[in-house]
Image (tube, rainbow, N blue to C red; front, side, top):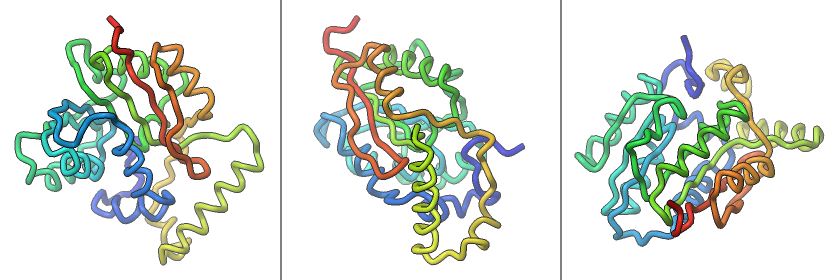
Length: 232
């Protein structure tokens, strides 16, 4: 059975496919990786939720040269690709199959940084709030949670505008729309995006400081917050 995030039957076409369906995909990743306050030479422990094929993981390990990452995803297909892609980083990366918030973050885990890309929107509003609480508890004081994801607009005309923008983006990437959609496995049944405003409020209610939206392009946004230095 197809799982959330397995939007293509063949996981090997995920990377070019996601770049065709997510406008400014690399820019979204850059916003996630530019947001943390740590220096690039700091030794930081990172949890990535919904690591997929390991594309963002590889970028993080390259950019933060002393970092180590626990990369979590629940898709065997995606993790097989991640294992191949991340082999060069050796013991700096651990790849684990699991779901969130059910399996990760675990109560015993502690991280300087938690990141996620295009994954949390599969959770219901209630589960998102559970996840935000669990991530907060797993962060060291001063640690950051940064999420790049699909968001929902309350205004119907903005939802329509975003849909048209994505179709234009697909065509600009050289895909014929019918050909692309033939490869794309509809995942709407798993999608449950919430508004950016609601999620920023939920982060505040979970106890995060410095809650902010860092980047947005139509219905894609990067946002997050910090566990306070004095949090216990």
